[in-house]
Image 1: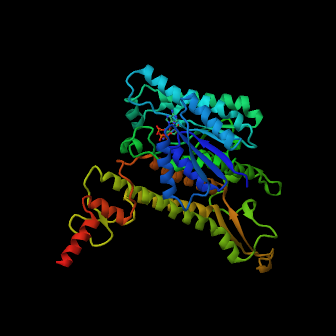
Image 2 (image 1 turned 90 degrees about the horizontal axis):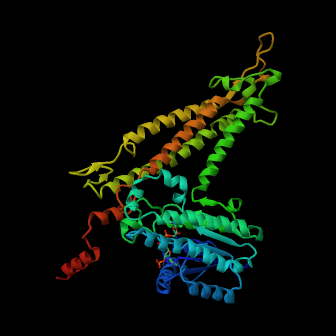
Length: 481
Ligand SMILES: NC(=O)c1ccc[n+]([C@@H]2O[C@H](COP(=O)([O-])OP(=O)(O)OC[C@H]3O[C@@H](n4cnc5c(N)ncnc54)[C@H](OP(=O)(O)O)[C@@H]3O)[C@@H](O)[C@H]2O)c1
């Protein structure tokens, strides 16, 4: 298998480092060159990766000095790659600075634009001849979704307020300009086979906002930078080729999911409007819930005619929904546990125990989550089960002849559906999903690492000054006395 030579700038921390790990874990054919302005920081990061993930790493990782603001260092890196590999398959322009806490606008803008715009443009131009020697070259610019014009016009979040006091907006300006660098490269070199992407990596943990814990974790709100690495992986594996020349976002999958739901609704509407049994015109949307109608009967010669098979077909959606319900409940429970745990960083709270609470201990929730979530969830779940039962159901028809004699040979067992119930089920399901997404936008109260329900982590957090090794030594001393 021919190897893929991938160069990532600014790879000693944050997204660059996490992406190097994700790529090297993905395939033994990936040869990742981690570039950065300080070789010592790069080597430390690489050694750390190798010692922590020796089992998972399949591809090759190495370091190379490259300061995007220093032409001599760029030329040296180009020469090294030319001599060693003769080509470059993927260039990831990731290095950037946040430009925070610089008192005057001129200094901030010149520093930030030099690193975040001029640097990547120069690096791209310098490596382009090597990229064009690749059979399938990619040029990826790590941009930012939150830096688009529209989002900034509307952005008034708490995190934004945290940063606004520390910057004059140079970073936002630089990312808009970087998007244009990507667009121009796509326009000018796309016809030579260069696939250019601007990539929005999402809001993730890194040193961009500062190196203290609060800033790194985005005040507890930033996600895992490996998710950004996975997006990069999907781009260079060709999964996003249809979006070439565009700004692709981490949550692009969401758009596909939404699209598939819309396609289902449109097809349902189209199919219903085609129904006209025996030439009669009938509006399927007017069929009442659970009504048996010849136009919505699912019946054909190949359709199973036994009672059991029709019961199974009619109830399969119920089983699927039950599985989704368990997943939904589990996710909501984890979110509630994380929120309660995080809030205890600000307010002292006794722990919950599952049985026999004593003194200050609190009992567990009867329905696993607080009633304000549990009760609406149960109501929605019952409604949806009922709607699904009206959407697809089993029909048994007893046949009687013209003389009112039973003719069991003409009996029919089949399934039927109600269009309005199907549409209502989709809408209620969507509503539940939107509620979950909206709840997930609620941010944790503190940057305290999430412990889930891991009793070991909880116990450790409850005894901050307790050193188990020291305690064991003391116990042993006691034993020897
Ligand atoms: N984290 C987020 O939430 C987020 C959101 C949207 C976009 N982004 C983008 O993601 C990219 C990576 O940032 P990050 O969040 O991972 O921040 P980070 O941890 O600060 O990483 C930035 C990297 O760029 C390097 N760098 C800075 N100036 C350089 C220069 N002149 N030459 C070469 N390397 C240089 C830094 O090296 P040193 O360690 O030597 O300074 C560091 O390795 C950036 O383009 C950023 O704009 C991040």
